[in-house]
Length: 307
Ligand SMILES: [Zn+2]
Image (cartoon, rainbow, N blue to C red; front, side):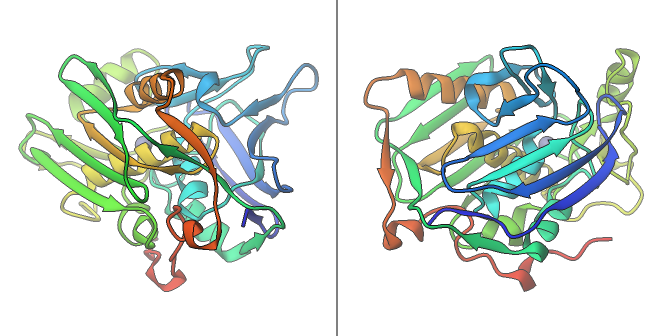
């Protein structure tokens, strides 16, 4: 059945790229509402923005949504991963600024908050998108693919020259609590050279190494405290992919394979999948099929404890 959060929960902090302070509140919503953002700091105009692939304003560093009136919300991917990973289908996400707070750079504060409030089951079946044909997109040496599978799998490979990252590969199915157990505490990462370039261009202004981002330089991990997982970067890329795939507008049943992929390419993939006749079909989930969806099998005690 469809779900929502039982009661509102708020998170405050600065945006990673803008440095702008904001408070974000996830509120309960009824069946068939879906996930929407509302820019509550704006007094006039259309401040509602759907959490949907067709309003993504493709930018390389984060996922930014923009409604028809030009109202935007940036860096939605981690809170969207938490919502999808906890199996929440309906919520209104109010935010009083232009960018989602980066919190600790991962999704674990959002996951713990949602699970503390609890999940309410609503009186309507879940509709999911089932991938029926393989769809692939390529950009330079990056590829992203959706192919048929019995549940949502995320399969990711990255390769960086920095020896501390190197080549990392991981594959997980998302219907057995693995998002909370294995992915949700993995933080945003970048390389020192990228930080210098981004800050020169007025980006990553809210980035604080060790507090909300892991910074790599060659064979060194510069952030105090080191890594939460030896392969934290690829786990974070999988977290990002789950958040970006949640913008399908309903849970996906299929295998996502990303090689050096990122936010923009995952969005291009969703656009191609929905534009390809026969590639995606909507299915109404019975109780058995619902066990194949992200969020199923999540166990509170397996959500990582982090400072
Ligand atoms: Zn991310």
